[in-house]
Amino acid sequence: MARCRLARADELEAVLELTHAAFAPTIALGLPSTALREDLAFVRAEAKRGGVFVREAGDGALLGCGRFALLEEAAARRDDLARATAGMATGGRGGALAFARLAVREEARGRLHGHAMVAWLEELARRLGCTEIRCAARSERPDNRGFYLRLGYRITGVFDRHGVPGLRTELAKSLAVPTDTGARP
Image (tube, rainbow, N blue to C red; front, side):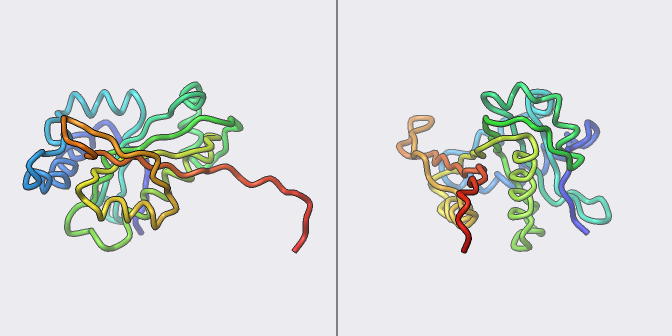
């Protein structure tokens, strides 16, 4: 059975290779993703700054990966990450978790691994007490936007990047739990 978890230090090279393979099609778009310029030192720094996670098959093969970072008040709870990834709530409230570089191995696409990775990140954010989760998608790949919109994300802005108008779409989803008003159905 496939599962998501934090990447181990000895897997970061495989994470880099998987990311490069997943983002390689952006070469045909005229402005390749900056993910293709990343090296192992960069991925190691990302692992220390925030987190690198993987989706692995039951046999241990890596199916997908991504990166995340705690923002604002949530960043102060970085020490709670081990507890949160073990399934425990940390008690903090506020802040946001942002994720990027979501990548699924080409032969594993279309099997809901992307959905499972986003769901894992949302649950991790909830355990850390975050009230929002954020991501960015390349605007010229409309399947990216649709993927996140179907998962309940809303577009918070479209921005220029690298001199290209509207290249980056930023999205967010509230993780706040509605308060009980006392009304009963």
